[in-house]
Amino acid sequence: MEVKKIFLPESELPRQWYNILADMPTPMEPPLHPGTGQPVGPDDLAPIFPMNLIEQEVSTQRFIDIPEEILKIYTIWRPTPLYRAYNLERYLNTPAKIYFKNEGVSPAGSHKPNTAVAQAYYNKVAGTKRITTETGAGQWGSALSMACAFFGLECKVYMVKISFNQKPYRRLMMETWGANCVASPSTETKAGQSILAQNPDSPGSLGIAISEAVESAVTGKDSKYSLGSVLNHVMLHQTVNGLECQKQLAIAGDYPDVIIGCAGGGSNFAGHAFPFARDKIYGKNIDIIAVEPLSCPTMTRGPFAYDFGDTVQMTPLLPMHTLGHSFVPAPIHAGGLRYHGMAPIISQLILDGVIRAEAVPQLETFEAGITFARTEGFISAPETNHAIAMVIREAIKAREEGKEKVILFNWSGHGLVDMTAYEAYLRGKLSNHALPEEEIHRALSDIANFPKPKQYRAAKV
Ligand SMILES: Cc1ncc(COP(=O)(O)O)c(C=O)c1O
Image 1 (cartoon, rainbow, N blue to C red):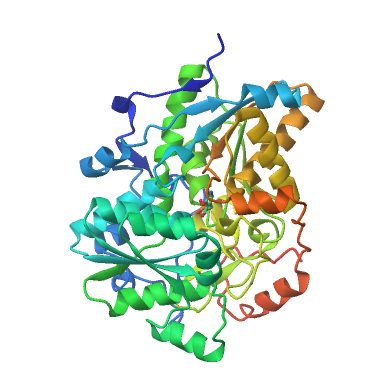
Image 2 (cartoon, rainbow, N blue to C red):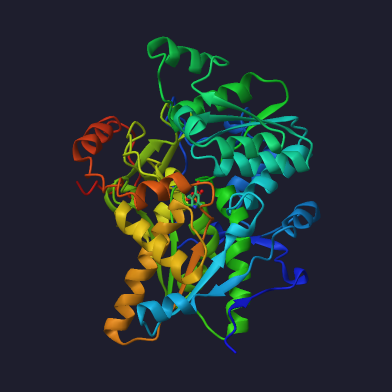
């Protein structure tokens, strides 16, 4: 009988995370203080993050031990199963073998708890009592709410108002785990009040929600802020995924020729691909593909430049692919991929040729999600559908070339709380958003005078 899924026993759960900063072909350029233009030091970040996470952020140690308390919580859903997508292979009539890692089995439904639990733990150890964050579509906010419940921490989530109203179930998940979730802009912060004074009907944005969460952390007692992607320590925590995949593929007797993941801030892709990227850096031949929306083409069209991580310019300047911190992506349903920047490590690995990026249009992603649901059963998050669309393209290419490639991809989350997006697709109400050329030009003009990284690359516009 065909082996459909490969489980690892709990005893095989990785005991360490993998830190790719130890193996980068080119050293990273530092984040800069926006006021002085000088590299930021740990003390600059201390008002926002606990020192133990700041130490991880700058660490170049190759493997970092996962504390026992985190391992205990990981075992609720980890190790996650690796599936072979036989039905999809047959449907596509491809000689390729397709494997997918199911991160949707976590209680919150995505990969996000891998770092949420770690961040809550390190905050608890550092004496934090309350964590603040922002959330767009709600995956990250719900993951952090659960993690805070495990460690007895208060959790405050600023949820983009339009999503707050459209996605009551994500909000209710957060409340079930004990978090306090408010619509952003709120009247609770100066940032929120000033936006509401200008526009009482503001639908909110991730940028506004970040400002509210950071302000609330800096002004709140024993409070810190938590970010669900982009930063080095978030990528690090997610590598438990790729390390498990390496063991599971060894059991199957396979090794990937192609690795695919969708990328918003980059964390699920990084966690899945980095342990294999290390093999590539030391000589393996693997095509590692990060997939983004055609309407938010950060990696495929944005310059490699210094830019703020948030819209309201509170973060350090990060060296990354960016569309400009004021870029407003089209309202696609993959809310988690509507981000103007990209993790600096991923951006650097693109420059180094270790990773390549592709962009896909919204309708192709939903078509792929429907094909996946009707062959493999699982209903995927709209973000995850971007990876599936790329997998289908690669499997068809393998058929045309007559090659028996091994394709591995990260199934980053289920879409069971995103059914309104599927409804819009099934009723023919979804469209491919036109490329917002003028919007890209406008947003990039905002960063034209920022310091330039040594490896600056111009935008492809
Ligand atoms: C299911 C799912 N996949 C992928 C992403 C993209 O985020 P990241 O690139 O940080 O993994 C998100 C973000 O919310 C998500 O919810």
